[in-house]
Image (cartoon, rainbow, N blue to C red):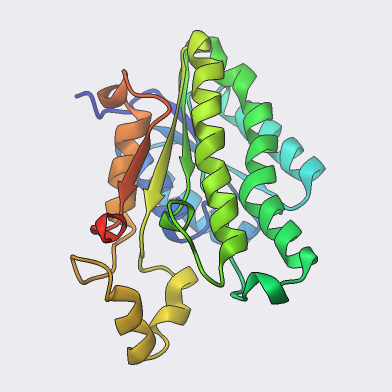
Length: 252
């Protein structure tokens, strides 16, 4: 029963697809009402229907998290629609290019930071007052790219590494409020964001060569640990990094 989220109210960003969608639906299945935040209203409507089919309440808020003002307003709207907040999942993020640092345009670096780091600060700042009312949990979705060097993706790796540091700082700053903050770190997961690595057999073999389990992770395999981090099963856990990567980060 420690994994039960009945009565909890959760906000999941980047909820229209992939890991975010899987977490939102898994939370509903575990008993939570869920607010869904992303850019695509049509896709969010589909996810909301899945949540409601499980007997839970769904709220939809649209925002491009690159726009700070719109993101803050959408976060406030989502929390109001739920009537409060117990769990925040900062999942929105991504990477759209690979290039060596020497050739990278600063506009690309800045956009990556706004998407993967700045937006999380905006959403977290708007959410903390509600989370602090009764104690709550924040789950920041980072990446194995933030645990070690990420050649040709230094911009993304740096943002995700900074998110892990932010997680640990926030955990200390908010413990007195009863708010727990942990990072969930996926490895190579089969979503549309990693389609480019499955575009050819050669690229796929290269991606999986360093994964001891020799396969892609499934979104459900990230959603279940996200339930753990949101639930009472992790009630004495904060400032931690939970890696779910098929052994990739254990490789020398």
